[in-house]
Image 1: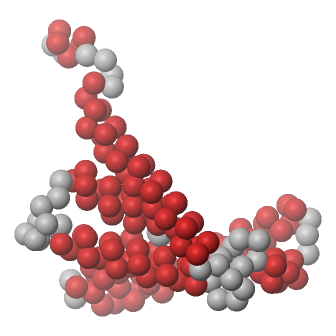
Image 2: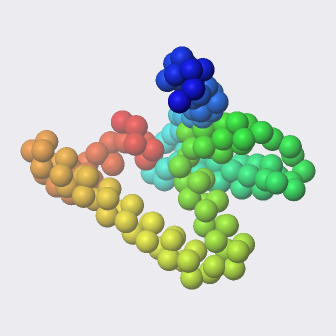
Length: 162
């Protein structure tokens, strides 16, 4: 190891990564607040319109921006700007947008079986994970199963807000 390298603080070479993480974090914060505002604006009993709208808008934005700013695209965007928008803003606004982009990329590459498998396995495992989380938390809370879930859903605005 050279004398110059030995004298550098451990964080010195991480500056680019730290800046990128900061951009992603800022985008996620903005996206999260945006999602909350959409959910509040569209809150009401019944169908979760806020969730649907956030997922549709986020999916559109990630598909549009990722395609427009990829190498050879019309928009020249740095890696930092791409990560700010894709991982940060869209990720904070809706995680569904990333899943949608990955699914469309499988389709665009002609990997139809992979796309169908990814979508099917994702949706089923997400539902199973939510169910398991609900069951475990219900038992930990000492409350009564599906009846408690039904009451909670009836008392919420459909977007998870009571």
